[in-house]
Image (cartoon, rainbow, N blue to C red; front, side, top):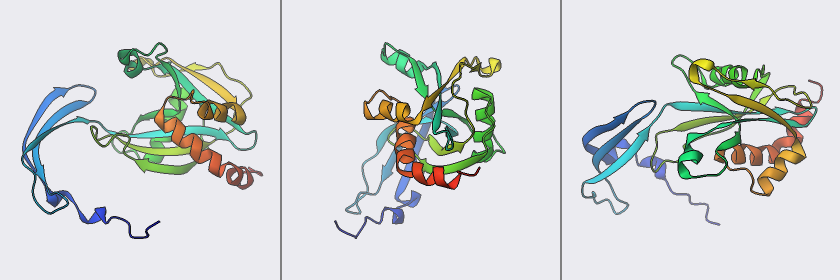
Length: 213
């Protein structure tokens, strides 16, 4: 494998130019259209092209993990995306997640969301990734963590903020049950799969690190 990686970081915003911008929808998120040009890899400038983008805030995602008892907590709630797509099961299992409010750090937002959505007091956050989930169409940017916490052997807690019409049920899984969901492709949420695969690689290290916790 070549060690000469592409130097994409040398190409920045100065290589792209917006000629016009239109806000075509504004609500919980917004949709913008930009007429723009950008520099191609042969150093020529493109013709003016139109690109639509979903504009959203940064978000934090936390997968709660108990390294002592080797358990995972997932939340279940109705999701409009699968419903509109026509999925027969629009109630999905996923990590805790939420938007980062003004003045919050990703870490403080993660702690707050864990309390609101699952009544959890996260002890530590292990950073997994900071990434764009869909850079072709969205400004969304995810700060993704494993949340170290003590979990009971079962949960049927229903939580969430009534002010946001949240109706969220917590489920606790033994690690082997959880990872079987990923291996069998029953898990449908991208961040859940990413966090689960990261945990599978780092699980033994975390269990050793927090063995006397």
